Image (cartoon, rainbow, N blue to C red; front, side, top):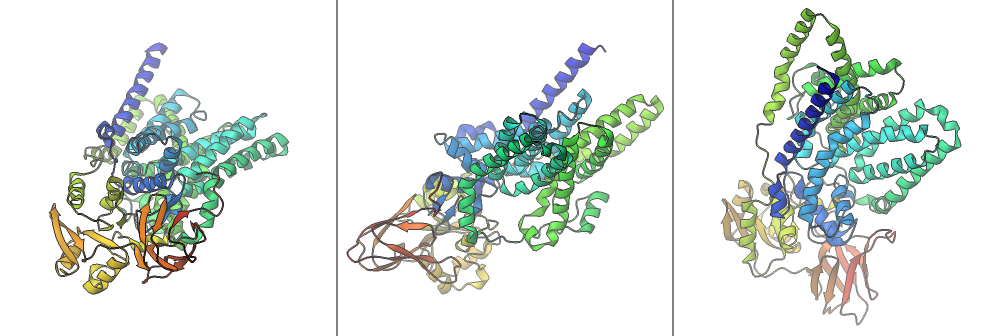
Length: 611
């Protein structure tokens, strides 16, 4: 075969691989979701969408969302892995939120493996190495159980931001190496800010690769131009991050990390994952690609030991060592458990792919020079490994979950819309709890996942079906009725048998109004609930303000959560009012004589450099 034919064949293989990549992404997020122009709800997208919708209603990067959990600061600590969606809305505010979400889900998923390739393609100088890198990026992106689960479940910014961190490494090398490195420094600063916003936790994954670059190029640090470029990168990153970083710092008291011990970690688990045929104690039980990334990556790093110009590969290898340590050591630490350390297996694998590509190309070159008998033995060994790889392909035969609002969710909304008055809806199902405010504007008790790092989760429903911190067995009808009244709950939607049985045994509290798919809907209590706990006034909860009219006293306690950044006009002062056993107090208004009307808005203490 001549050189031209080989080039055409290689080009055809690349085009075919990219078309397959696009097809698999659109299989998970079909074009019908775009055509429907409704929330592309699926997995984690439910709560991402609810959070972005709350931030959009609040008017920018952050604000106060009155539609969920009796009021909470939206767009701050609960946005650590979701900010990319909110940034997209801020940049393209006129695009409908459903279409925006679809474009982000598809766009990030399409670009992720291409960024992995972009990060390592200069280090992979030959066509064989580059082809191996592209193939590995696509294989791991679509077949690895961890990676494909994350972006397929809607958490596209975790693996997508890992790929962006990888791009930062060659940019950092160019920033340090270039004599006029200000342009590369500017790009490095922009990428650093993007990583901070898109998935803040992943900032720590950039530390080891960037430090490795600086150590390897320490001679360049003697030149003032290098420091100017690095200072530019740091300045740009800090300037772009401050509008969100400052409110995060101001509201740090709202951050309540909760340990997640889903992944035990430790040396025993690491040994089992690397030496057995299953991931130890994990639902994602296929580990061949993890083992391949580690072994081929180590061999690739060995290949680079005497080759100049492969600093990017070695720096990413250092990052892989650190992230693999985070995955298996951090679960032993209380702080580490809050980071869900099992996720860091994803950057450890992706960081190793450029080194693994060098290994594959080196092995292919060796095999090509072997005698035919030896090549046959190698082919036999590969066939013995094939069943373990084939299992990943068979996983693709499973149909992906539906995308969008379900018929059952629409039916629940149809039943509730026939009700004359709706205050807050207590919703046991998290997906519907996320969708209800978006679909109807009705506020909910429930909604945000219990994984949110917020004290405000008390006025919600967690994954264990606990409401106000307790499961159905811990409540009496009279006790729960007091909480429902205090939180202005007018309707309830139950799904679990335990709560349905509880409601059946409490007819004075729950009045059935309909059933959807075997799940009953209820009217709660008798008189329509009010947003006033103490005092007399008319209260209107709007997206960006609480309007108080016809006030008749000096003190008014509202059934919404207090926040230090809430401000009232016309001399009204706001104070915390502890209520029941909620860790977040309600809102007390101390009103001057003669004031009958006032407005409450959320105003960051920093003044806000962005809306």
